[in-house]
Image 1: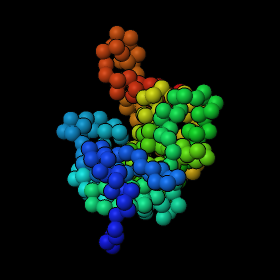
Image 2: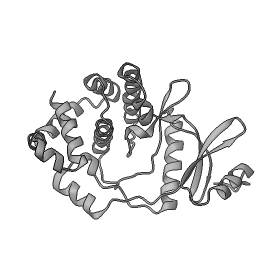
Image 3: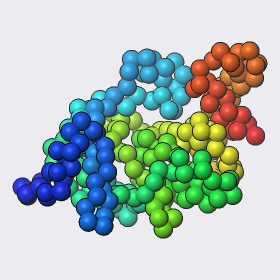
Amino acid sequence: MAERKRPEWIGRALQAHPDREVFTVKEGEKRYWLKKGRATGSTAIHSLGYRLTKLPFLRPVERKEASQSARFEAEKLRRLGAKGLPVPAVVWEEEGFFVMEDRGESLAPRLKRVERTEAEPWLQQVAGALARLHRAGEYHGASQIRNFTLSEDGAVSLIDFEESFPEDTSLEALQFRDLFLLLYSLHRQKQEADYPSMLQHYMERSGNESFAEDLHRLYARFRWLAAIVGVEGVRRRLGSDAQILHRLFESLKR
């Protein structure tokens, strides 16, 4: 990008938080987030788990250096914004970091503080936002509920786009992974919701109508897990991931 003088308020923020990767900055009446690049990649165990199970949320992410990660995310945010998608605008970028506008509080803690009746409209918005992203020919990569935000006016936005995948990975596979990650994260925090309605809302707006069948086929492959985790003594000994998968697959069965 063309050389410009760094705004003083960004320089002061960097000096005030030299060791923090992500933090808020207030300038005047506006609030921003400064995000430094973070290296991406999956561990060997993570990659082995995917090869053995083919579970979507275990699909390995592409390895990138911290500066590459920052550049990738800033460029993706600008591209998504140009398509009219609900993402923060990038207001400044330099080697290794960028600054974006604030789009409100993460929905993950917000959902824990309200009753199900209040949460349902937000979850419908979440499904709609992910559907819009997919309809536009994009994927998220880190679509856990914590990466959806709610602004003061009640609008849902998407954040955290640093993860990428090898070029030969199909878009359909990455979009299915997005949907699975979202459902997995909601079950992780034991979120009560009308999941059939949420899925229907997503499929109607994304065009990915086959994903319901894909989820059920995935359940059919792992229904043995439901039987194993259904035994109380076994359930206590298994890790949290297995228990979360059990709740998710039981939901899919219903």
